[in-house]
Length: 245
Image (tube, rainbow, N blue to C red; front, side, top):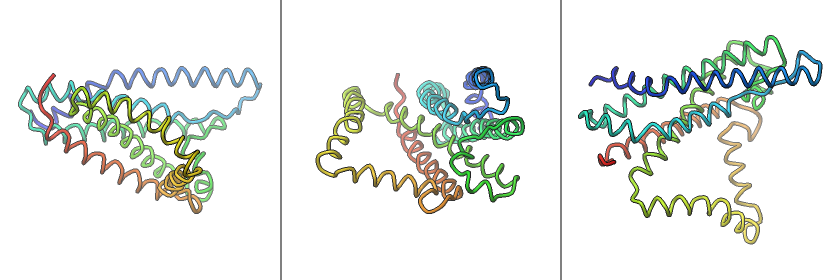
């Protein structure tokens, strides 16, 4: 099986879900816009961006992209390295297409109503000074790497679970939520007095280019590095995964 066939296989598996997602998003956007206009009587109402919906969709899609595809390709004697290349190329195509759609949508709709995507809301200060074409290009690549990171994150989690035995899956499924929902907040309240959360917040601001001023280029580098790191971990998990149901 050639790389082109593998990429086509991955994209065919998710094509219907993507179409349904955008049909639902279009219907929801029209409904919300109509509701706001009827309520306020203002045709220039503000409607926020739908980036979070795309991120959630891609994360869930990533969660569903490992086991069935891995078993099918492995039983057809497709090498692990070729499997991963096909997956990664299909991920780039998928995330690139969705980034293009979302970026185009936000810029077109903004011409007719007061609409700002998440990128323009977060990096508004920078967008006021940048050229139009530069803003669109940076917005597109920002969406691309952010979407790719989300998709790969879902793929990484499900491939990690695939490698675990039943007991370890139970421990991780219970232990990780317990750490973040119970242990860490209790530790913050009783011992560190909020320093851990403040540190995490500062790190996120630095990685997002929001610590000292507003710089989306830092976020682009951060997301790209993060996606590359997660992709490397995904390949390591795939390379040693055993073929089992």
